[in-house]
Image (tube, rainbow, N blue to C red):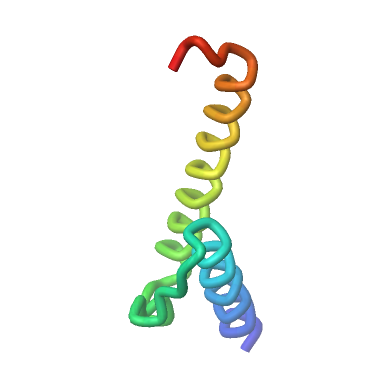
Length: 67
C-alpha cells in the first residue's frame, strides 16, 4: 500500500516536472507502466538536465563572449 502511494507521488512529480521544464503536457507517456527503479532514474535524469541548464546559464552570464 505504501509502495503504491510512493509510486503515485513520484509519477505526479515527474509529470509536473516534465511540464514545468518543457511547458507542455505529455499525457501519452505511460509513466504508470514503469517500475519504481525506472521512475527514479527518470527523476534523476530530469534533475541532471535541470542542473546542466542552470550551469550553462551561469556560465553564459559569467563569460557572455564564450558562446
